[in-house]
Structures are given as structure tokens and as C-alpha cells.
Amino acid sequence: MSATPDSTLASPEQLIADLHRQLAEREAELAECKSERDEALQRETATAEVLRVINSSPGNLAPVFDAILEKATSLCEATYGALAIFDGEQFRFAAARGVSEFAEYSVRPRPHGDTPLERLMRGEELVHLADARALEAYQELPGFRSFIDTRGVRTFLQVSLRKDGALFGAIGAYRQEVRPFTDKQIALFQNFAAQAVIAMENARLITETREALEQQTATAEVLGVINSSPGDFGPVFDAILEKARGLCGAAHGILTICDGEHFRAVALHAIPPRLSELVRQPFPPHLGGPAQLLLQGERLVHIPDIRDREVPSPLNNLKRIITIFRAAPLMAAIRT
Image (tube, rainbow, N blue to C red):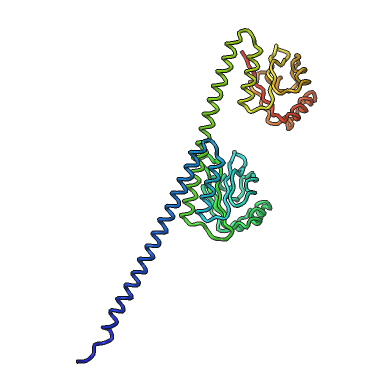
């Protein structure tokens, strides 16, 4: 009987090779599943930890921002992270990760610039740059170029903090090498941005509720003084000025009454004795000054910085007084 061809031996060898290949494929699939499971677990754990910080820090955004940046930069493999608040005119960095100098920056965007923050201000939800040095702003703006070069920033991811179309701020992640973020990392970063917005909204609601309660309490206390001091205006004026000053965060305060031509202070807080003596005596309103505006019918006069305002020479003394106090004058008319 003639010998069988070698193919009879090759079949078992081929079968074993196929089995090894299939085993390797299954092991690779298992490793990928484990990796995805671990990543999902890390994301869920990070999200839970941030939510825990939000719940334990009502109205206090600093620890929330720090926790968000820590988790976001770690899970997204970013060298740096920063979170900025937008006030309608400029961005002010409120938290930073990886470099403390971020927290000292404030940026006033240009209306038509191409930096990431400027693009977010114009309505983009996120800006993902493989290499920040490719931006026109890198060539045109020395400050932006210095920011990029000093820290070796290359890949740039910036996500807006937005609610109902209103821009609250931005959160960014930066790498020192040209290595774009993956779709999963971008989605994760957007999730952290959403958590930051939730925290900011919670803080706003808590602050508004607290302020409303403080105002109601102050009003009730003033009414209590009025009821307990019939015909005696002194303690009433003192209580009104103290509550108003405290709620508005003012260091100094004066409450004056007007007889139609002259003003006279009837309650004072933290006013130097020499000035107190002057304002307790009847004085006419200065031409163009806040008091005259009230006499002319204005219900409220608010001057953010009187040193920036052109006023007639008789108000120079007032400007010097304001400079000493470093105050922003706010005067309100009380009419019957």
C-alpha cells in the first residue's frame, strides 16, 4: 500500500494553527472588552465623584471646578486643563490644572478673532485643534503665541459652558504633543462641561434664594424697628442704612433727607468725623452731581467709578473723597 500524501499530516497542523489564531482573536476581543469596561467604570466613578463634590459644596464652585478639571485632564490624558468664566465681555480663569499661572489670566476676546475662546464666544460649541501653532492668532497675537510657546501647548480642546444659548464660560484641555483627542475623550470632556454648567446653575439658584431670604429678613427687621420706634426716625434711618449697606456689600454709607433745596445726612456708617460734620449740615446739591440728578427726577444714580467721569469743578472734593474710600457711588431717591 502506497503512503498517504503529507496533506494528511498538514490538516491537523492547519487545524491547530487555526485554533491558535481564533484563540488570539478571542483574547484580543476580551482585552478590548475589559479595556472598555475599565474606561466606562472610570468615567462613571469620575462622574459620581464630581456629583458628590457638587452636592457637598452648595454654592461653592471652587472645589467643583477643581474636581472637574482633575478628572477631565486625567481621563482625557491632557497635560493642562483650565476653566474660565465669561461675564459677557471677558473670560476670567477660575480654575487650572497643571500650571497655576492659568488662574491669573483674564482674556478679552476680539469680535472677529480666531482663538478658541473667541470662536466659542461667537457660538461654536467646541474647538478641537490638532496643532495650535497653525492658528492665525499664533502668528498675529504675541500674547497668545507666548501662552502657547511658554507651556509647549500643541493639541488644543476647548468646550463651551452654555445653557439655553447663553455662554457661561469654557473648559479646556491641552497636550504638549500633536495628538488629537479621540471622539470618546471629546464626548467625555463635553460631559464634564455639562456638569460644570449644572454646578453653576445650582450655585446661582442657591445664591438667589439666600439673597431673597436676606432681603426679606432685613425688611422684617426694619419694619420691627419702625413699629418699636413710633415717631423716632433716628433708629429707623440707622437700621435702613445698615441693612442696605450690608446687603449691597458697601464699606461706607450715608442716608440723607431733602427739604426741596438742601440735603442733610441723618444716618452714617464708617464716615470720617470731619466729613460727618459737613454732611450733617444742610448742603445744596452740586451742579451735575448725583444729588442734583435725584432732585431732577432720577430714581437711581449709579456711577461705577467716579474717577472716570467728567464732573464740574465743584465736585472735585467729592472725587477726592471717593478716591480715598475707593467707592462706587450709588444714590437712590425715596419719594412719597
